[in-house]
Image 1 (cartoon, rainbow, N blue to C red):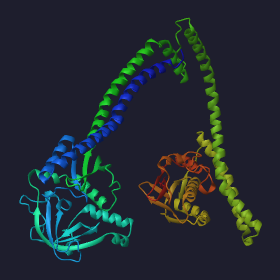
Image 2 (image 1 turned 90 degrees about the vertical axis):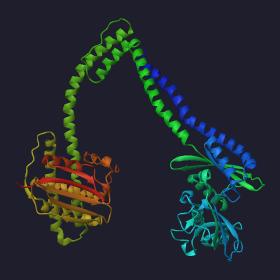
Image 3 (image 1 turned 60 degrees about the horizontal axis):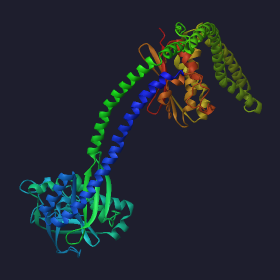
Image 4 (image 1 turned 180 degrees about the vertical axis):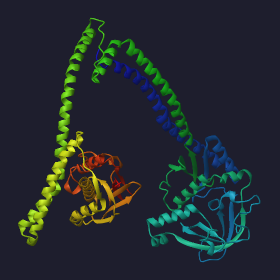
Length: 605
């Protein structure tokens, strides 16, 4: 037996049970849904073919058509209707308006009587019980103006109003799908091409007859989702966007209110042999509900199966591999450096020999690890102090060395010779600062080892900030940055040189990460017993996951470590140590358009 036999037995038992459940789950969720949709489409297709025969043989008026549609919905849970060659609902004689047109310049309409299907413009619910429309101008003998298009030598009605001046008012009625389609086509072409292909008309007339459905016929026009899809299909058909108009069948996928639907369009002929369309629409919501119930049901099956698998695995591991479990437990304790337990040797076979060897190994490892821990702890402390010192000094010496190098270059080139004493003094000052810096870094290393004691005194924080800003003015000018200060005179307690170093580090960090022509703001504000110092740069943010890591030594969000995007990552770590030595709050957070570093200092008592 190998060491992993317990895990293998557990995985084999649990995996087998889960595999069987997963197979059943996949078959009854993923494939069940596909099977349902396929079967639903097949059944609806067959039902539409059967409905076609009933439509051709039995439907000759509005009542018979409504009865056929209701019977079809009750049997197949699918809405269906018949459309003529221009996409209008056939046998809609119970919901229309008859209009006698006045003479006009449009020869196809001048002086004629036209029939307007009202379902394209009005909801049937908008009529009261006495068949009076809520818009009072829809009544017999009332005047009306109609606007539309001539498409394939036939009028298509888009808007209606009491008169031509009302066709853009809120009181107008319009076929929303046709109007939306018109705007869509206009966006794809241009007005000139559109008008060349489709001519507009505006006619006036008198309403001679208004018919509103009664009784069971009203329900035929209450399904507004189905009616909207019919009108959308009509718009596509008239504008030539129904690509398969010449084909026998087409199935269209649509989604409304997060519910998927299938639309079936079957090109056929009516009783008189004229082209027509059977338009059916069915919902796939039942299959989604069924799949959801199956998923919830299988949650309980999976829980029960997992419990059975765990019980079976526990039995195998205890009864078949008990000696190996004992060895495994002891070796895990050894891996955690716990050598307090030994393995009882109860047999003289290979497992007994293995147990004895492990006991002997445990004793030897224990003695050696104790000695190594002592040696490693001493070495780690020395190595840590050495690395921190070298890294900190190398980082902090960059700026003074750069100043000295610049001064030497200026003196060597003979530029501004009258300022030789100034540059020599500047170099001497930087050398002195480097000497102090090395001394302070040694003291910082001592602090990290627990022996460093930092001197504290009082100073004016606004004076320190102005001094730092004056030194860094050339850097601001070089990067074309704007510096804004809002300082209050305040005397605080702390180590002035160390706080100045913190401000330099924060400002240098802001310089590196602020885009050109942006601004850096330095503000001080007085709180109860402290002064809050804030340095905010605009134009750049720190990812939230890096806000805590930026204080770590050598950590930088930009791994390139190029001088133009930051230092070696020690500046903020050193600032953190200094502020911790002062025992004051500090931090960083993203503002609306930048990053703000802040810390607080205690006021002088």
